[in-house]
Length: 82
Image (tube, rainbow, N blue to C red):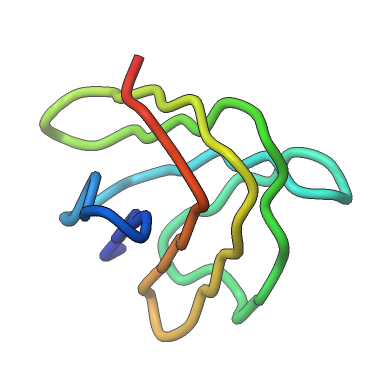
């Protein structure tokens, strides 16, 4: 799936991802390719991405995720790669 992670300052990740684990107010969710459409708030925590190029872990602030048509867009208040 296509994944983009942005903050107001910059794009942190843009590319293909096999799996994304995201902390939400309802608990941690795992997003895989062709996930059902979803809009959810994202809570402060750790966001994990698995891709062919390797795994990445981010410490993220609050934000929102939108998943639609095999694309996940995550807009965060702040975020840094660990």
